Length: 121
Image (tube, rainbow, N blue to C red; front, side, top):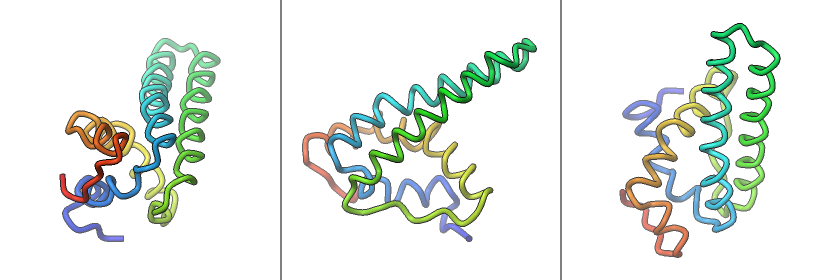
């Protein structure tokens, strides 16, 4: 699917609306850094040839992602469904490494936690 402005802009345009439930926001606040740590640790362990440790950290990242999925089920407006394996990978990594940190650092997370959501960023 072609995304207006590219994947990052497309995901950002609806991010506020898909992240309003307070428990989901808290889960994301904990689980996104856990996902990032798990992925980066896994890559590091792979470079050291420590395959068991890499697998454990990849599992840690997967659990963090599953926790976020449970939080998303609480949202009034669900995310747009994935369109295949490449879409899954792209959207997950963009959300974890770019969109959610941007949401926190621009104040969107705090506004939505306080119930002061806006569709403008």
